[in-house]
Image 1 (cartoon, rainbow, N blue to C red):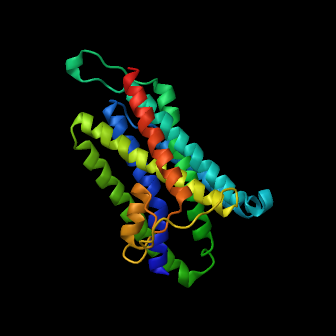
Image 2: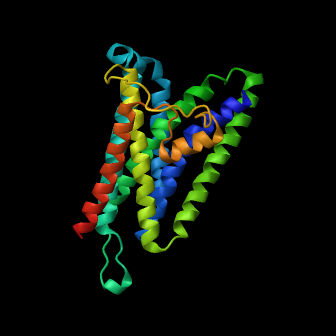
Image 3: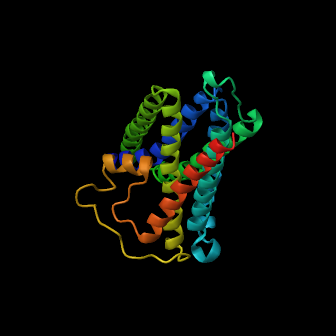
Length: 264
């Protein structure tokens, strides 16, 4: 029970925490304070709780495919928001001092977009945590093991996010900016691939044969597998549909970033 809780909480924590660390690194590059974090955490926590409380009712929607469709909608919206974020920050990032010019995105628009991204991420991940932990509230013996494992998993996820953040901010300006965007592109690809998986589970998309099977030497359930899953969307048995969605999400962010840079 302890190990199961550790892995599950780690998986749910890592994705949101790593996304926040990437956003924070880019925000520092724009010479702005990351003031959107508390608002995004609060809004995401509220929506996650509402989602978790109504999970049973939502799952009955659309011929009992409501949960999968809603999760896919959240992930697709999150991917679209990251694409817009990449375009905005690339178009308006602080220029080198030698160029004699610099510009910043609209403070209100930038903050709202960051808040939306964090809210979507917390809603998606937090609802799973509320549902999982809620099932053990009345089980005194198991609850202690679940909370202990969950606390360890949460700590590992937050620590990994801090490592990524400080690793990014230690890079020179241009390297930090583009490294952060590449990681966001990988994250976006992961979101779209997960959305494709949800739609396949709802029979809205066709599921093909796996392109490969690496579960024998790197299981998704391992700590390494979970970290790679959160960071780059690692799947041990991905389908062609998932791979195509992953490439589409990643490419969209990179194209948006390049388009934004050229329009400066």
